[in-house]
Image (cartoon, rainbow over all chains, first blue to last red; front, side, top):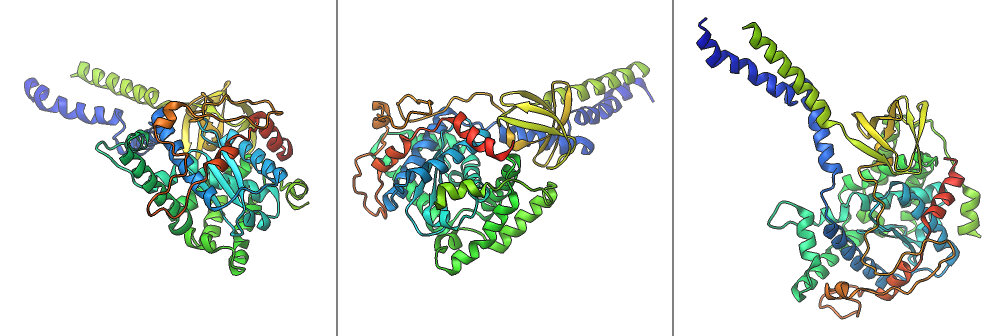
Length: 286
Length: 162
């Protein structure tokens, strides 16, 4: 072959695959590199301080709405107990830029609510149905995951001119005109409906359970106690205290199946942990 | 021909090295304590202890598990206890100073004029079509409860045997 022909066609022909190979598009390494790039994108949240302030503002609006419906319980011992546990969990696995608040609300329904920006409420009904500290920690961890993963904000599908959801969110929430305030109230209405009527996507609830049981294991708590709590939710539903839960969450059977699958995949199935029943009884039952 | 093959080979090696360096990622431990394990599963043998804010270098990934290097040791750790940022600065809309002493109970909260101008509606004005009126007074009471983070972690960790 003539040298000029080689230089014109074959050299680039050999060069091109080598470049793509090195850049990770080669099938041998592509999956790993794409996975790493995807994770880098997801883990670098890309949220500005203004986005986060907007999220907190929105969450406060929603939290105030919930407190307009249900009063905070006056039992300081129980409130402090829940706040100590919740703050301790959030300090280890919550979003570091958020301050998390935990309140027990005077509602007989068995449920917990997570508002964007760090506001978490547990009903009195839920507290009565919990048997030990591991179950309580699991529930609080489940709600913290909803906030960590921005499930409510994403569900509302707020979009704007650019493709960045949250920069549009900040523009919407951060404004001070009356039309912006009206829009904020509208979004809060939608979020309120999500929490009390429609529910989040099933995958979001599964994700919260998935990460909650792993958080329990990381904190040396018994993950199976949380699984038992979820299983026993059916009793609360039969007693008429799970109306909102049944509307907004996947079926108990599906949740249990997911929890057990995750436990198996992560080598958790034989792991035991603390339940701290005595301390729980001291603060909640006595 | 031989020269060009050598050049191509060097280019290939260089690109491999570049992609390895480009995708290396530093994480920071966000829980107060965590362990590097010898396998990507809970209950695996513990290799070494890492502490809060310690930097670890990612070398591999499997689901929610990362293989990392720290202080010359390499092992698996759950991504749940890691973060990409070491900053613990809280973002807040409240202008009060956060008192983290364990004896502090309540502090009056005030709102900056900027926050007020941005439409933090505190007056409880009626909204047409609203199904539920907000209670900002109760919210402020909730936000005034100060929980010391270290005390909370100690309360949680002390009993959980971590």
